[in-house]
Length: 309
Image 1 (cartoon, rainbow, N blue to C red):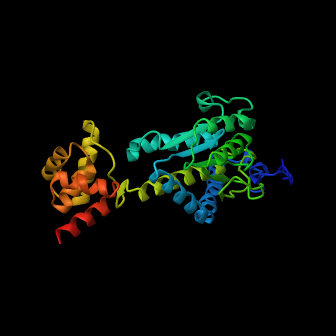
Image 2: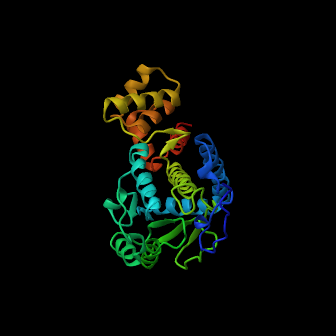
């Protein structure tokens, strides 16, 4: 049987169009199907790369919000919302951030994380109500939608803007109308999906990459790392103590015994132990330097060393 002819479908979002490269996917071997999906996936990083300037603006907005004592909100529906919840949840153990720094809002609520909730994404008023009750002036709100026009997300962004928050939108649709309440538009054009309309594929992969880069860059700028090491965790159990000990040894080049003693003196606070060892100062001085540097290890080290000169 010949290939099913691809037809041009005039719709708003490229993700809904039929992909001319995958029309024979249902006639392929298992290896062929996987190779074809993988070939489509390789297009995602380039699409994200094209949006890096706009993503950088969003990172700066988020950094400014968190430095000012405000919050970052994610808003999404379906795959977008689930990815947002995942990213926000993973930041707590990775960077030891307070649980209210990054807040994810998912159309349909907690039930929709596991089960489809009919019409939840089409309810702009629900999105507006959700953000009206949680967003404050000075916050940054990042909406995510493959189509660029999900009502729940757009309703939430409208409400957030009215309340004085800055807003951003991650969209997979370069042809979607840009809502006036969006301060920064991050368009990641991954094109037609391998399976038409299945935005859990390339569009979802792109959103995962964007979210991971966005939150990681924001927290690096906020001093939650030293070099490329996670140093904001606290050793509250044996597993974490082992991890912090390894990180401390890697960062300082000192012995296990010296690092273990430093962690004990620092009550398990890895940043304090790090400044204590690298600057050769008492724990109390390390704590004061970190407080003055808003938790930035490098800034604290520079301050302590400058005072010693």
